[in-house]
Amino acid sequence: MARTTASDRLVFTLLISIIIHLIIVLGISFDVFSEPTNAPVNNLEITLVKQQDRIKPEEADFLAQADNEGGGETDTPSPEPTPELPVPVVEEAPSSEPIPPIAMTEVEPEPIPPVDPEPEPIPEPPAPEPEPAPPEPEPKPTPPAPAEPQPEKPVKKLTQDKAERKVEKVEKPETDVEPQAEAAPEPPPRPSARELMLQARNEIHDLQNKLNETTRALSDRPKKRRISASTKEFAAAAYMKAWEMKVENIGNMNYPQEARRQGLNGSLMLSVDINPDGSVPAGGIVISRSSGHEVLDEAAVRIVRLGAPYAAIPENVLKDNDMLTIIRTWKFETGQGLSTR
Image (tube, rainbow, N blue to C red; front, side, top):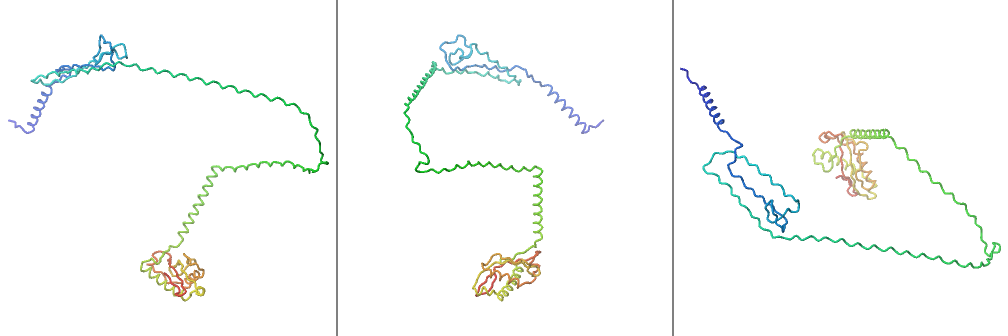
């Protein structure tokens, strides 16, 4: 006897379920065109009129709240409305209780009292304005009557020889010749597009050369580190303090005698460039602010030259620069001498 396996039971179960589903699906059918079971709805058409007639129509086509023979639009009655098509209803399982038909209640419109339309008054045309009377022609002036000719009186003729005052004859100068209008200079010919392009190209070339020269000059200029009284770094401040002490000593030993004799006092700002070896290059002394006295300005420049060369600049002060610039204020006082700050 063959044994039943689990796969056999699964196949048998699937076949049974397919057969049951086919019976259910094929056994139920739907009829789309079945007749509706509910009663048709009775429609009532009511027409509202805007105007009431005194004569009651013999055969009315529609119901209305007042008598009206046609509203004044057409002589023939309007056609009947299109009947509504029945709505298909799907058959449902019959219920035990029948559905009662829907009761339709007629709404009676309230009567509107008859109103006799008043005819609109016809506006009377405006009376034509009277035309203005033509102006009367002005009377023509009558020409004056010719005067009677009077007899001519004898006129005495005076010659130049017999006259008391002689009139000098002045020769009338010849009429000046009007200067001819100068011909306007012809405008210079306009340059062609090629000439304009060449001119613009030359200008661009010149500007490029100037820019290259400026860039080269800036690149050739030495890099300067500027230190002043506001410098807080220890190494730079110590080098500047030593430089100040040397400058003050030399300045007091070489104080300008002309300034002492004249009693000149003043202060100036000096900018000094120092090379890494301590020397001062030519043109490295610049007076940023003058004292107002040429004697004091020249004395400050001379004192800086007398003090050179100064101590070599350490690397931690120079910091990869080519030159060091010291900016200080020099003060000349007759009683106290030279001081920097």
